[in-house]
Image (cartoon, rainbow, N blue to C red; front, side, top):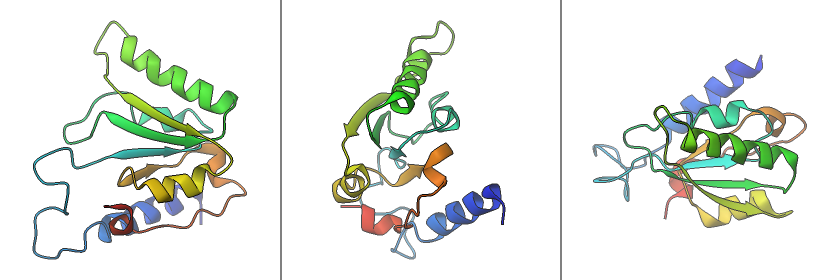
Length: 138
C-alpha cells in the first residue's frame, strides 16, 4: 500500500469515527464555532505547512504543534510566519508550540484538536497509533 493510500485510508477512518453522536449535525464542543482544530505532529516536510497556506471557514486559527526542537520545527514555523506576513492574502494562524521528548504523549494528553496533520518523516520509522477523534475531545 503506498503512502497516499495509507493517508487517505487513515483520514477516512478518522472522518467516520469523528463523532460518536449519531443523528446530530455536529460533535459536542464543535457546534456554533470552529469545527476543525488542527494539531501538527512533528512537521518533517514542507507539506505539513501547506495545510495552512490559506485560512478556511470553520477551521480555528489556533494550531497546536507538537515536535522535538530542531531545524524541521524551525523551518515549519518560518513557513507559517511567511504565510501570515505575505503581502497578498495573508493568513492569521496562531501557533501554540510544545517541544520536548514526550511530544507525542503530550499531544494525546492535552487533547488540543480534532485533526492531526502528519507529513514527512513523521511517517517513516514511527508507528503512530490512530486515536479516534472522540477520545481527543474534552
